[in-house]
Image 1 (tube, protein in one colour):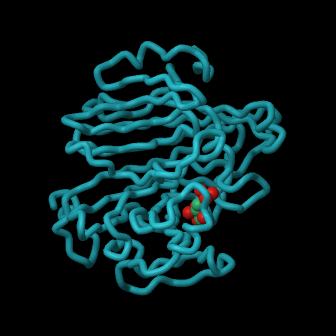
Image 2: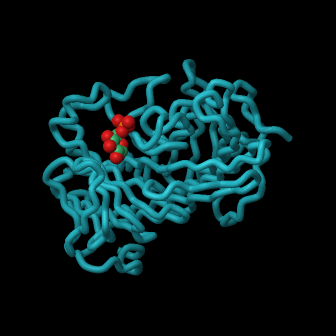
Length: 323
Ligand SMILES: O=P(O)(O)OC[C@H]1O[C@H](O)[C@H](O)[C@@H](O)[C@@H]1O
């Protein structure tokens, strides 16, 4: 069966105790995934964007700006999808067009190996419109599965296929532009990126090497860490919480906080909100991904939030997973 069009009624798979389809005007229809106790995830069809992820106490784990603007503007917060271009690295609008398009529910996605314990998931699909093809002349199918695990973990799996019929390959850059909610950016540290090489977007993308200590924040940061490890931890002392970010198929990790000056210049961001957010974005930026016709790429983001009694030093999965 073909994928649903953006305006078709919600398919049967959405009638489940774990899923709710909520209609709203102006491209704001959303799907809510429900897990144990108060765990939930909200996904907006506009942008195929996760806009909320709550733990089993109902606490919001992602940052969303109080000044976020409605479609057709990109939505400030949650997990925007940057495709087929990250940043300004190309001729398209900043971060590509996928975050500004209405996605559809994919009611018959090709099989994807799943953990049978995961009951709450939804599949979305984006295909280019005629206008998109004028800007970026490549035919593709972008399938996105968003799943809420039994323990409250969130995963996003992207499958992008080249469906060009003229034999042409295409190349793209990509990011899961994840906005984490933090208590106070000055008290947060990131472990897993020590000693990594990075491109500094604030210094003309010049390449540097990070020092040996965990990363802390005292001013604007906009860096693309290259060949970053598959697991990175964001340790929030005040919240006694550690976010564990895992990535597959995505070599890089962008770290961004606009700090005070840039915050004031952004129309859709509160002047002090930079204190309560941090973007850590699994990405493929330095080396674009190339697909031949018929080829498919897969890139996965995994997020969990665990209580942290976590000390600085090497990332120890046992400590991260068991507190
Ligand atoms: O304002 P946006 O288009 O959403 O971009 C917000 C930020 O995204 C990324 O993290 C980039 O590295 C930054 O350079 C950019 O400022």
